[in-house]
Image (tube, rainbow, N blue to C red; front, side, top):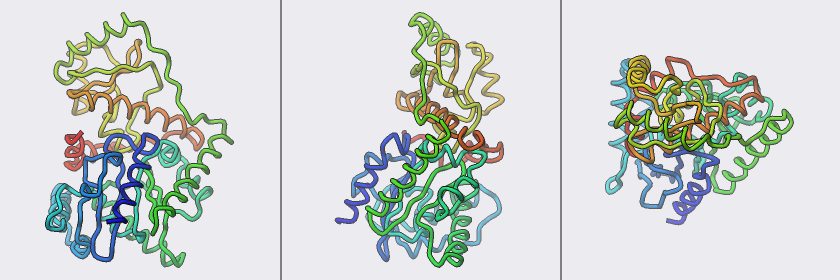
Length: 354
């Protein structure tokens, strides 16, 4: 199908490291009856036409009128089951948790990404007022838990925006999350993204904020090896794979859901002893993925891909913090928001697909 070829092309264009990390971001195309959406846990760069999950739009829209349980786990289970029931016969894969949000946006195409250049604004203390100044045509969404809650909040705001403006928004910024762009052609999507990125780059330049982050040269090989061995001995299988980078200012809290998923909410900066790692685990609920020592920064995990992503997202978070200085500084996620992501089954599923 030609239009699926176009959403594949968009997925590849916006599936680079400038826009997403790991399995982050999602894309979709919709006809009058079917929504084709990226599956959870896959990468935009790897999408092909058969990989998209086909969903019955009428069945999807039942989500908007469900009687939702107050218990968060029961709510998410009901939503997950309803979405699974909407998957068209012959289609496979678990649809992105943001599929209902794609369904409610008006354009035929939707491309959702998490660029550091954008998150420098969305994760900043003055994000909302900056958005209103730089992008008056956009809809700003204050932070709300991903999934059904976010979808219903965005639906309400989109309807309100449409009533006031006479048209639905094509550009949405989500606080501590990223950006959604919708349009009826791929070129419309590209033009909006180009406008967003050029506007933000100009703003950073005017504030004297660099859009690249400097990583210091690696320390001595001997020092790195000593710390690597100490981490492996203290953490065991939790650090079966260890990758290293020169020093950079690692974020001291959760920047966005993607950063929590791949790098955890907080880095480890203590002594490289088993007891100290266990104390961290008791306090934070999990072993660290990012460790900072005098030798630099280590990404650790049980698989090579997870270790690489831990370090990559830590670097991305550091760049977001650097960019946020243009807009009043970084605004970390609240403990309540952090805990929701850390305990959300959807993100656990996505992480396991890496």
